[in-house]
Length: 116
Length: 113
Image 1 (cartoon, rainbow over the protein chains, first blue to last red):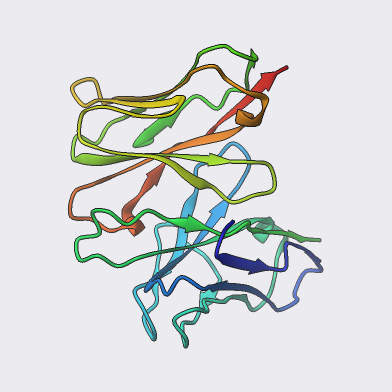
Image 2: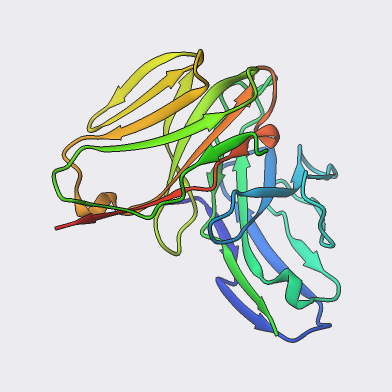
């Protein structure tokens, strides 16, 4: 069973609302990630973090922001949701091992966001 | 052109069949190759992890890497209905962290009893 938890599992919200997607992990992993997943499309990295107070943007441009105040917690925030933000958001974590040569990703079960 | 190409399927086979899932890639620097399995309404979970070329076997699953052809495969022997899921290939170069993983689109597989 996954040791990385995402809430809520499903969220339907109106345009213009501010939302925060929660992600927590109990494995003590330094690195955490947010991916966007749409049907039939590859996973796209939108944010990642090397550790506390470290955040970086991923390859896919996103209007969301993230914070990393505690090792175990990596929330994602959308200040003003739009229908184009409708997607599945996956949180993941991995150990930091220098070059990262043996650090597979552990995923949460995702948040399915629908913006109407 | 995408760095990693994966046939999205869907692929439907009878129980007990041998399944072959494949990905091609264009970046010759890729050295680490992974297969993730994703059940419906769940996150992906790591199934197989291989480095460079060759085969790796784990129970009914075999991962194969052919770097000369830039082609990787996942074989499932004696397929079971519980193997029904979406299978994602992922890969990256040596010396790069997981944030550099490139994923395929995923192949949706259904095993029919």
